[in-house]
Length: 559
Image (cartoon, rainbow, N blue to C red):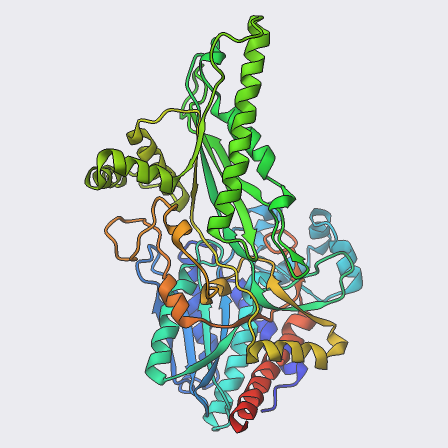
């Protein structure tokens, strides 16, 4: 199985990447449909329309935007099958400022390199080190050039299949919505299960082609990853107590408690996961707000924030336990501070009232307590009522907050209190597992010292491949019981509920690697792909990975 020459790969992938970048596909939105159609068009150009065993668009069931996955399948000389995966959506382009009219035009942006350099730390050095070797534009590196490489490789495989020379079966899937809530890849899980059953396939795993980048200044390496980072989004509903600002000791400012807790949690490296030499970035808040809707002179009675926590090994249950302890300490510290302040302010060292106290509880605990008090039927009726009064403009995190607030109000409990729950999305982490695909990843690094390839376990950025596998001992109880909008079935009656096909992911159980293009500045004005590696070398490596997988399968069969 001979791959194309470097120049042929380069020309194809550059042209495909440019065409994909030219299409605005900010997620969520209709542009994602246009990109999916363009992927199919590229796959079938130049007389390849009849080259595929199956090709088409697979609708994302229940999607409000009518988005679809672009899918292609080649039945090779073996049921052993490798999957090429990539996403076709991007984040918005507003960060380009005055250059936004050119954000989807790599050629035009190349004429504004110096303007980009003034807006992008490190770009001047990159231009000197690799002159005329960068493609700029939104989605250029994250990750339309990775999808373009997959298309070029799939076209090559289609020609081999037509000649009867394709040793393995190959699937290509291009998904929308990775930058939002991964609706595309969750649909792909179902598609892959159907395909496996229909054609009796044996999946060897998935190669994701999301972007790779330098891990430190001056880093010369290119990386292959054999697993993926996960994500949890714990949310804190802070219950204070309203009072007039002239009598602050009669209430509790919910923002004060939220600020103290954020101080303890955000950028707290004690909450980082460290596994086999890799460490996740520390947690950060993605949103924080009180719940007042207008100006008045009343203390904010409630506030909330959610915390982005990346994981390599931490489970939902373990994180809840740690966060609950931190929240309890922060609550006690704030209440003690207010007691001491009141004593000084009033001049009564013994205090005029008993020491303040509060509580920390999880959504699961609140739900159980309310069911014991009012009965399951009554509680379910209240939650159904909360769904009926749900504002239509809320995202999945806002819907969780709406349900959690409603249940708290129904409980009759009073603050000070902290209610801890999870908001969507949940993204599983994937650890390296012994398999042929991972053997091939390590072999590629060994046989290409000139590329300075290194294999690391955890892909450090959120990616769709996280939904292709769950750790065998994964226990979803602490997760599902603490997501207020969780539904066991995607077809449940409450529109907007959160569901993950956990059982389907368990059944799919794919090994994964990320072997992607190289670039910098994803989600930034200076987003750029290094063309020599991403357009010329990467597709060669992808072909070689497939060829080595075929060889490993044949060797194992003979043994």
